[in-house]
Length: 294
Image 1 (cartoon, helix red, strand yellow):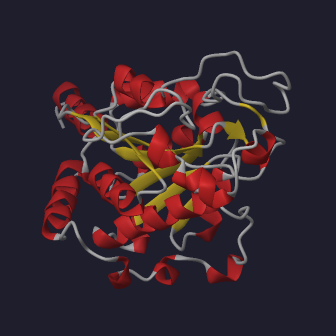
Image 2 (cartoon, helix red, strand yellow; image 1 turned 180 degrees about the horizontal axis):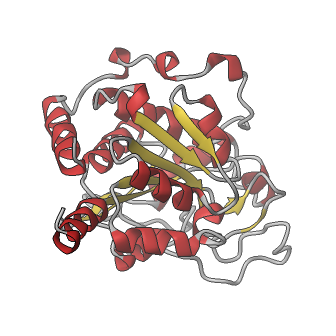
């Protein structure tokens, strides 16, 4: 089955699923390697919520495990692939998109999903992100943005907010952070979206749309680091940090503002941009057929 036909099939399945489907119809244990538990995530970490939303989206799209490949790099986000009962690849720091590119070109029949973090994706892996977006290869990148290098000691990342404290910015960060979605869109990603872990159902729906899209899909997930980052910046308890997402990243229909948002900018959530343009594998195969006459 070609990439286009495969994505059209997913879009049909996505359309058939009711938007108000409840989590009761989805059993997460069916998609987990239970022998890898207990997990290593800190109490209140948003990454576990993001993993649940991703597996829920995969369930709703009826993607078979043998047809699913999930690739991750280094960091707290990188550990998530160990828990997924499918074809998974834990690769080197900053390189999951590069590995996923080779995998998708070699096995275009697979649904390829990348789980990465803000440091993994935007720092050492930044070039891989922009060129994968430029090519528009059919894969989905879920970037978990917790504004910090959590696993390696709490260092500043490319998305750390101004004045936030990290182990490498003890007097407060003064470097402006990336708007990851604007970067992905500017580089050519044909599907770009953002959601917060607080809105789990909305996040599931957004991931479902991204996976069903034909081309490069980039989904930023605002995910709280409650221990390394939250404690250092006195951002409250785990529930307080999660609830603060309501005040910081506002949906399009809510124009309210707050005095001290958890993250500056009042970024929009949901699908931020979507366009149809030639998918890289299909376009390259057609080009070879024309040139080689095969």
